Amino acid sequence: MIGFLEGRLHQLEPGEVIVEASGVGYLVQTTLRAFQRLSRAERAKLWIHTLVRSDAILLFGFLDREEQGAFEKLIAVAGVGPRTALAVLSGLSPGELAEAVEAGDAAQLQRVPGVGRKTADRIVLELRGRLPRGPSDRPDALSDAVSALVNLGYKERDARRAVEKVGAMDGEPDLAHLLREALRHLTGMR
Image (tube, rainbow, N blue to C red; front, side):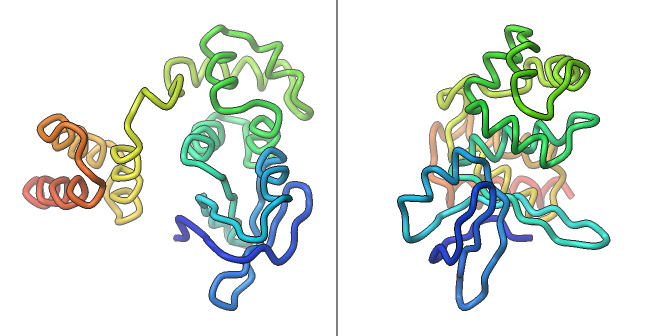
């Protein structure tokens, strides 16, 4: 699984970029918001969500972990695929999405092209209370550690418990320390 890409922007089009890293060009789908920011850059640093299907491996790139997390929550909603999730995040920032969901404002979601009333209602219903309301909800090192452990093959529930337990004991540790201690905790659980 590809979790992060950094490299030269080889090609840039609305919603799609090719990032050249170590001589390989990776085709990455992005939000229009990311496209606008990347249009002024020569290099890209993108957090990647990898989707493996029977006929393709698709990469979706985000400029920050907050946007990636919102995308992953959106595609977990029944009837919301990656393209719809990218459209939602092209029209709304993760913070605006969280505010709309918490306020039950399905009308704001319906303004996004491709999102109808039923889809907007489903997003509000399924994501209420599940989207972070801002960067202060969870320190970056904690969410990065959970993501790293999930990428190593641990279940998200177990990874989150281990990281939160270690994070509660250590205050705000750095990522390396947090991972090391969470792995010790997880290997002791097995």
